[in-house]
Image (cartoon, rainbow, N blue to C red; front, side, top):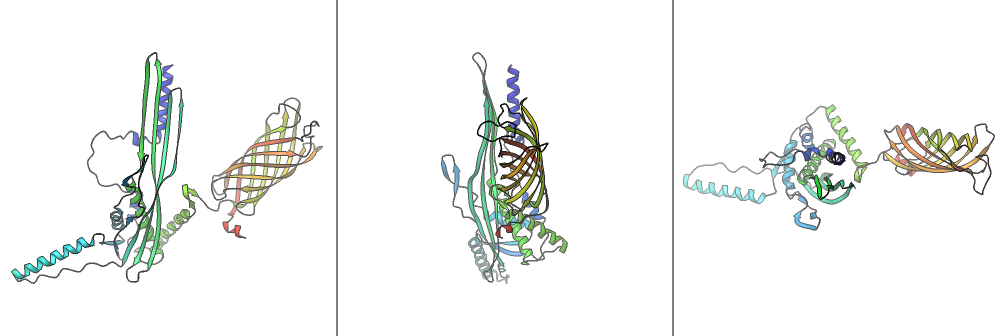
Length: 462
């Protein structure tokens, strides 16, 4: 008996630790030595951009934290800032890694000028005593472009949630929280003051907590209690670094596209670089908050097949589920609205009292609620005709229903549907009884094929 309890807690613990076993099995147990800082996922991409014809001299006076936000805690907030105050240093490092820019010192320009004054005064005194002709101090580099901007937003707890379960003293839970930072970077011409380019990048920061526990009396006056878990927080400094590096990458590529600066590479490679960036930018522009990706998906024409079960609600008791199959086609007027026609073959049964096959044809207007996402609920309603297999009995009907569709690709989707069919006759089950007409339900799964180009959003304006 106790073996079963240990087995259950082992299974729960393994399930909780599966997604974070790297953090769990690499727990720090000794003091670690200093190490070179980690690269982000964008650092390698930034270093692999083709080199420029000539690096651009840029000045960064201050790339500040403009949020003014303090780090949130369970008790409110502290006087510790939510994001790093060293964003200027991070930006200069990103500019160096790209090999596209020559950053010059401007953040602490007063310190540089004071040191140069000390050098001049020291040399002046030295000349008086030694009578030497020492060369003048070389002039400072001046920037053709100034980079401005900063961290403009830190949004905490944009998504929070979790999951947990406990049974008979054994349980586990998981919690997560997502924050988000936003960075703007702009290039300003020092000769004219014109803003040459502005880019905008956001990055999420994820925090996770997993735990499992066991609390049970295994014997009289013998209590067994065990727990394990871990918490993993994405470092804010790495998130800021990744966002700034992505902003520098975007600035370089958009500058190449607008011919603000020249690249030393073959035209084919440049076109590939710009093309890949345009695809990425298009996806970003069509992605809303919470990674909801919007795009033109469903084409104007489609066909579908469905299979499932039918259930009658008539004058007999004890209805039974039987088969149902349907084939049909859709025509989209716009991404939200379509008209569809379907031919349905099904059987209706009430135990031993009634069993008969039917055919039906229906015309529906269908509303797709989220046409630009992969998963979308839909609702439909319409009218049709139902008749038995011998075509001895025919009746008009109205139907309505709904479901949800998931697009495996732009051409193929799967769906789950439920519909109610209101027959304008009480003779569907060959008996007339009561005041209510007969009706039946369909529960089915479907496969949809889409043909042609997706219906564009612009069609909504027509």
